[in-house]
Image (cartoon, rainbow, N blue to C red; front, side):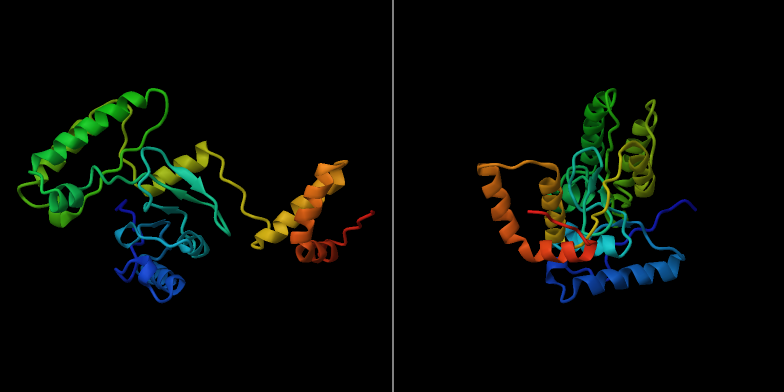
Amino acid sequence: NNWEFNAHAYEQIPMHKLDDEFASIEKTMKVISKFCGYNPKGWFGPGLTQTYDTIDHLAANGIEYIGDWVLDDQPVWLKTKTSPIAALPYNYEIHDIVMMAIQHHESQVYKNRSLDYFETIYQESEDNMKVMAIAMHPYLSGSPHRIKYVRETFEEILSKSGVVCWDGEQILNWLKKEVQKPSPPLSNNLELEEARYLLSLIAKSDFSGKDIQIVYNVALKLQNQIKSYIKEENVEIHR
């Protein structure tokens, strides 16, 4: 039926208040996968909440894009400890909870604000692709006194030349095609990667004076990682 299932957390608890964030994400993925027959590619956290580890946990569980970052109008790639994932634009201005439940605007404001927003980025899209994220919740936007403004908003926007209505996976596929995905890290041990980089500099460069002192200081900091790498890769170092 062309509807995309996203992960929105099994437990509607802020991510920083979970006892085991990884386990909660893993459980969410398993429940949705069992119901849909496939793993969801997108994640929208409860209340847009994250910790410093959330992105890495999501990537490790197969998530390919998030909608938690209130980006403006273009998707970007995010590096993680494993595979990079995409951050798609999300909007806290064209958002029915914000407008109706928090700011208490009248129903027609949804349409007026949406079209004013669209007019600006539509003009800007002559030079580059733009994404307009419209956040809706049926219990708000679907109310009888609001639904007509939602319909009129989409009818007006989609009547314009070059405008398409995409879900998250379609935006992700566009990003994969148009913007090169960053390479995943060669190792989860970031200090080991620093050691490898340092050794490559030593191998390719002639150092003197100040440069030698800098290299020595860094090497001293990473001496255990360098020793590990030399042993692992059978590297020969000649003084």
